[in-house]
Amino acid sequence: MISVNTIQAIRQFCRPAIDAGVIPPDQFRELIALAKTTTSEQSTMERPAPVPARMLTAGQVAKMLNCSVKSVYRMKNDKRLPGLYLTDSKKSLRFSEKKINSLFEEGDAA
Image (cartoon, rainbow, N blue to C red):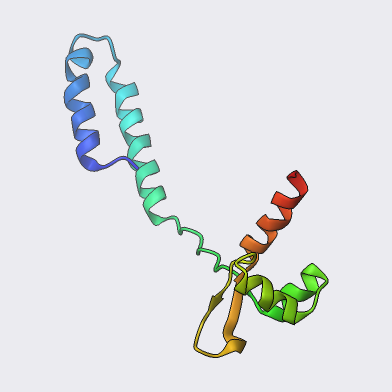
């Protein structure tokens, strides 16, 4: 994004070349106008909202791994699966879908 200060600095830098006739003044004005419109368009454009990480339950991970829920808890306790508890309850265990999928990709590469 081009700031107003940057445009002013470009004008000061190019002034001697414009005065000497190296840069035609009309082309320079077009360039500055283009820079201003691009800057204003960029500032009004909306940024896409970040996609929240999808969190999976132990049951969902068990289906992905084709194993029992008890095995998922065991793998979490053995630190073979990265997971986190949202509260003190055992049922609040969640796994990042990205991290589980990356484990599959690492297994394919081996």
